[in-house]
Length: 284
Image 1 (cartoon, helix red, strand yellow):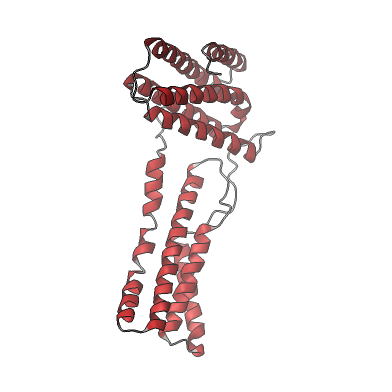
Image 2 (cartoon, helix red, strand yellow; image 1 turned 45 degrees about the vertical axis):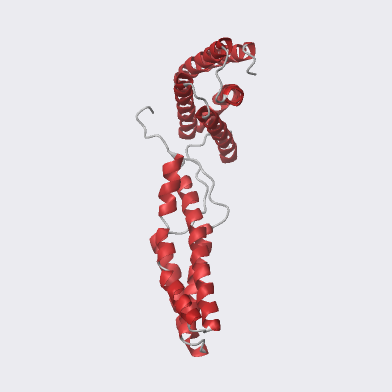
């Protein structure tokens, strides 16, 4: 687990944002044609080519969103298939627009329509072969009896939202020591989320731990960041916050190991100890 390459959501967004850049570049000749026709005063032809360019841009934007969703789907071991087939919709837009443009070059003669339809179909096929279409089946991973895909995904999504919130609060904290410790804590949290995705049977044992740990950490981190952003905190409060981070970091490190070792009893005992500590510090 420690040697695994950590997921970077920023790199993910950049990678799949760049993937469809060709779809934005290919229609540029259509835009140039539209401008030339406008300068010539050919209003109808300008509207056709301008509308076609707009349709291509819309298709490229829709496709890029589909690429991002598919990238997230492929990254996760358990995932829902995209509910809306964005890539397929984009392929249809491109296909229809390409066919209409070809028909326009034939002055919309009915005899040329079959050929234009064929060219549109080829455009759809080309998109499908180069980019692929949308995944349609949920990925179930290694689900065990008594655990559904929806349960696991709901728990993982909720955990990731809390971790992201902790990360957002961490970036507002100027104290380098606290910042680094919170970074280690969120790294451990993501490793636990990954371990649950690897083996969903761990979810039942990790529910309370994830809730206590993440809720408590999110609450205390956001509270500290909001109250002391840009200000020097009183020494007593700094000490209390440091002590809470000590408890969270130490307990979570121990429990990650115990969770992977399937040690139910020790896990429950250590969770209770952490919960008591958080309550004593007024975090929960």
